[in-house]
Length: 237
Length: 203
Image 1 (cartoon, rainbow over the protein chains, first blue to last red):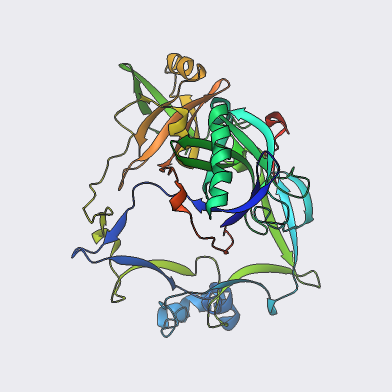
Image 2 (spheres, rainbow over the protein chains, first blue to last red):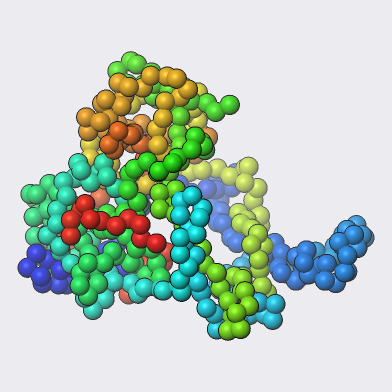
């Protein structure tokens, strides 16, 4: 994905942020060594769910009788078909609706409601009019490791010769400081980063390393601190 | 009864128990309620590509199929690596000692995190010496699998304040990039101050 980022001199450039995957790639084969894939298929639809069957037969007991006598819950023609290109829609009793008001209900960790508010879908701010800002706020790697959980990572890659120098210089400065840089987004450069519209906001930290004439710039994304929740019960997984 | 996870450091065994930590437990959670223009509650459904089949939760399943589209039982699947070599199953990390090795911050930063656990002593066991080492900013790692399976995850033991955590995930490889390794911009959007002032309660 393209991102727009500024350097310590407040010059900005669009570069690429690439996903990082685990080192070992596992795939599955059938017993004869032929590759297999995973496909999504239709198990049942709403017209064959219990509420619809009750609507047709009026009584739950009658549904049981119908299940014994036949297969009213199965559509032989449709069920088992592979699914692709699905969409998510809102429905009421009247069917699919297009005008929807969404309300966010925010719960405290103890389950009590903290707030209800209209849902706001913030736009992404990693490749926007205002570049991601080099805040100049550094945090030592050791400290960051013991404070934050980095749940997502992106590797920054140049797209031409000019952006190679741009990113290399950033990586060199971070390598020398042995620190992570706090990166922010938005018009004022004080917002957490959002990768897609309505997506999760992340606090972002840039790590840089250089080796000879090569660089490595990693954007570490965190939406969680490494700390014990308040009032934690003795529950276990 | 829950089994302990036994960690071994310098020949001493520490039985611990794990409590899963996530955002919901730290900051709470958000749920979305939807209504139509007349204030009637609306529910989310999946619409199939035919434009008419509506699917509720639990209405889909995943099937493993071969190149002819025939279903293949999961129990007969063979896990292989990138070279096509069969991967041997690994046992669960519970019920045996897991040797800890020292790790660096650079190792930890290569972790793609899947889950985080709070480390607690199992029953009345004494894990004080382990806490002491972690609070002295030491970090340890070991291969971990909850139930056994195709491969181990990587677990890091790390201290934060008076507490100790186990951060489980997979390791990735960072690439050092040279001038001739430029990439091409892909226009598709991604799916899905002071450090002391950072707000993690981003609900």
